[in-house]
Length: 253
Image (cartoon, rainbow, N blue to C red):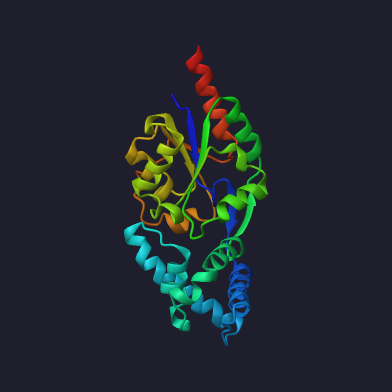
């Protein structure tokens, strides 16, 4: 019987997407932070966008095969900004400032409709709730949950930037399971990518997986075999509650 529901963050609890405006605004944010710390770069916005994209590609080449997540000062100092002449020691004092700004600016974010109602329903069923998120910032997910007014619903928030492991690596899921004190069979996982949010939990024996489509789904799932399927494919996040409610009612009969 499911008694725990763990959620992905970006693309699942919240709608997120990237466009040219967000790319430009995040690049401008990087230049602004660097100037504020006496490290101004002689770059216009288009050049900064290109430089940062190349830097993130370097980091993606490292983390993709390893499913490891580095700390913000390592990401920015050893990968993203290396072509500017900056390094780990130079960016360390304000690396989290860069990481937080990037996460909330490079991606347009908004809470999905009916998330609060869904969480309230699950809470009423007695479910333990948690978040497992791949993120390159240490504190952004916590603060965003606070801003949405839903932080208190979750007994645990497990982040790749803290654990050092990215989904679908089993270790990030195991950390969360130990935090909420649940077994895999008791857990449902809800996410928007098959490659991270379905394959990982299924390999660990989660009791159920839910898939909801997002802007990120296609870009993250290009190499996923077609036979990979979630237990439930949903269109509205509120369905997580109604499906588990109906299961609980059937179990009580």
